[in-house]
Image (cartoon, rainbow, N blue to C red; front, side, top):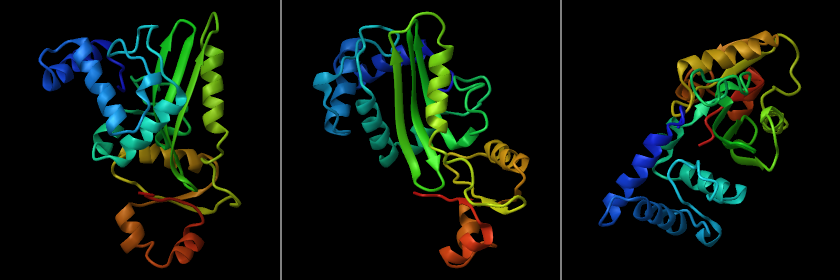
Length: 234
């Protein structure tokens, strides 16, 4: 999904249909998807319309509530790591999030969706304070360029104000922790650079180091020593 390959999505739906029904066609594949959403994710599919695998048809109908429920279920399911790996981080090059939410970087994982007059953004915000949050912003019915819709979506994500350390003085030390399932070395360095540019001293670490290494100690002691940290909330 990072590169949004519509052909692969259509083929995938047919493969799902072949695996659960007699024939590998769109109807059987989409019926299998709706069964999963209803039985496993607890989504009311009576108000959901799926007509293709890629989402390019204007006859598809869904809502932010349905999407956030799916995101929550995915995050808590055994498929979490595989699903998370398909979502692009902010500013990810050669992907759907390129040139979007670049400063937020690895603190956002999301999937875009667009047609003429339609701009969607759904995914996760990783908050140092609140942990992972699912979001879905669907905008439609406008004419012309999607620029304003995209900028609005970006600002809504940024309104959470979860990417800036609070009550920290210049030159304070920040510990940036790397949960392996969503943060790779490139993303970690990008985040470190963001806060370094803001005037903070950076200490890179890992979840294991946070618990057992140089950041060992009670949560209060760690918070006092580090001042702010991005911990593994799972």
